[in-house]
Length: 184
Image (cartoon, rainbow, N blue to C red):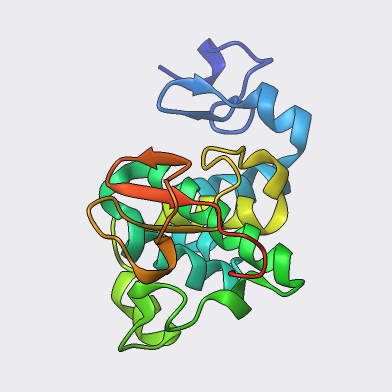
C-alpha cells in the first residue's frame, strides 16, 4: 500500500496518537503535559527513583519498622511507627533521635546505618518506607491503632518497665503499653 492510498489527513508515525500496550495516552498527556507524564512514567517504572527522595530519618525508620514488625505486615509496622512518633512528640525531638539502642531492640548491638544496610533491599522496604513517610509527613493519618501506646514488646515477654501494667492493645505478636510520661 502506498502513502497515496491512505487518508491524507493521517500521516503514519507522525499523526499517530501515543499509546502504551494498546491504551491511548492522549488524554492523560493532555491533562498533565509530556514532561510530567514522562517523569511520572519513569517513577512508576523504577521504584528506586521514588525511594531516592526519602530522607535518612525516613529510611532508618523504615529499617526499624522491618526489623521490629515485618512479620506483622502493614498493620504491625504502622503500629510501631505510631509508637516511634508518639515518643518523639512527647520528648519534642525528631523520630530519628529516638531510634537508638536501648529504645528499640532491633538497634541493640548494631547501629542505624548497619540496620539500614541490612533491610534496604528487603522486598517489604518500599511498604515500610511509605509508612515511614506518613509518620514523618502526615502523622495524623497514621490513626491510633495502639490506643496511645508509647511502648511495645513481644506479647510473651514481660520487660521490667511493664511491671504492673496491662497492654492497651495486642496487635499480632506485639503487646502495646501506655507508660506514664515520667516513665517514658
